[in-house]
Image (tube, rainbow, N blue to C red; front, side, top):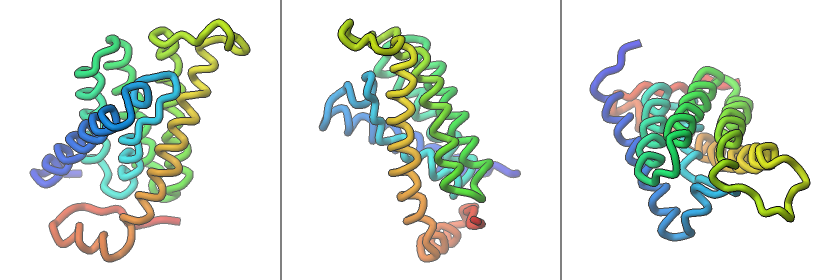
Length: 182
């Protein structure tokens, strides 16, 4: 597979979109929705587009996550492992793109498992919520959030942008678009 200048430009667009959506969400709703224990990072819906546009989206959302987490620095773990989670999730979605809903569902799991496994260190739950160990509660919380953003919102976005008129528009600019589904 060749990674040309159009792919590089598309990577930059997705990295910028990821960062911009996170900043807009932080400004409009507040920081806890992007970094807190009930993290509903709307920009993660872009990961689903890996099924449509492939490697440029994988690279873009990975770079975008790195830049967002590095700028709003809460710790080295978040910069490294949050970025790794996006890389794994978007790669899974791209590889399983023939079954898009399943791809989005399975792709949401690494984000929940990886990010949830360390985020409790930065946001420990109140003592009143000691029903589960902090790490388990955080994994569940982040996984549910990822399922909402990637599987629900992302899959809807993917379905809308997979319509023939939009696919033809993308192809007219020479972009590689994966249209095969089952």
